[in-house]
Amino acid sequence: MHTLRPREERIQPMQERYAVWQVASLLVGLYGTHAIGYANIRRGERIAEGDHVGMETWDRIMSKIRELLNGSPAQIH
Image (cartoon, rainbow, N blue to C red; front, side, top):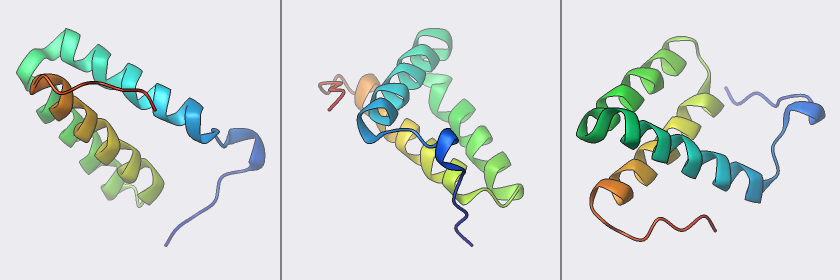
């Protein structure tokens, strides 16, 4: 079930893309190749809590981590 957050808690698309890039970059800096594993654990926690929006966010973070680890351009937009 998809739940909507209150308007004040929603992040605008560009801000969200930037936040995803920031988190991915931070995790790669902290954990290197283990960043994917860390993100996957957080994704699993969101699933266990029934937080599908959070799960989708961690999916995007994991995708950006893969780009960073593979040397792909890490574009924000």
